[in-house]
Length: 427
Image (cartoon, rainbow, N blue to C red):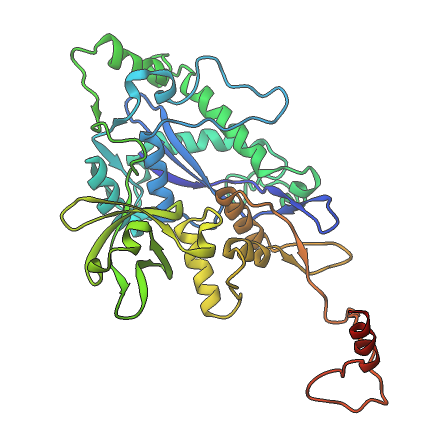
């Protein structure tokens, strides 16, 4: 069962100020996507989404995490440790590494994401999809019960909680409380990571007082001869699981004096082999893309032969970025909201655009939506979150003093001939 849940609490994130200090900026509501196994009720994977809505890439990313080797959330809160016998099934049970389920139950509210899940994830992993009837949440009782448990035991205990519904449990001035107590989103991620590890190792009445991990161990180890886990075939290291495939035409060549290349989302990709293969001009290449990192992609010829790794040209190779980030940047550049210079990193330009703040009541502040987007880009790229103050309309701007005796000129201020003469004599 897979579903998304809007976390019922407000959080903040730390941003560096122009003075070099750190300040907390409020974020908008963030989302949680989780994947739970029905029989054992074990959490297979999850993802925290710093966005006002869930996208298809987020859903595919959670599915990809469940099959890949799990990565634990690093802990920075003093005294917070992972339970000894807890964690994801792929961490604790060797037989569960790379295991694939047979059917996935999705929420009808995610139906608009069905194209990506159906054509990419299902085709790559071979499971069936059950959307079920509309407005019947009870067909996915395990994931709904898990979200209710997370809400009650973790997020509703925070002083910045929004409650289970608008009329129940909401803290007074929840937004202000998140700033007052500096309830950081990164701390919330760590608390949730510990909760998931404990949840998978905690016995429950629904499992006859066995933990989810013990149920999986029973079927995968004690009854191994009667129970077979379905797994993907072994793939070479570096292979992208559930990739995004695109067919691109090779451009350039001797006719127009350009080395051959392909173009994807407004960026040219090439390598040393393609740059010297003028005979491929006009032919098709299938590229395999990891939507979380668009700096490189794998290319294949039409007969299936691997052509090598293509690299994004120029400035787009400087910083790691996702498909979503590039589309947003291209859209802002097309609307002339931001300007992409040839010698500047477009991801850094976008971060600067998100982090511009106007001084209000002698205090730097950011729009919660812009701050949330800045956190998302910072997490995927590794860039620092830094506020850039903008000059107010009434602020005094230093300008060169204009000599009223000197006539105005379209060419700007006239040079000082005496200074030029002195500099020439010194040379």
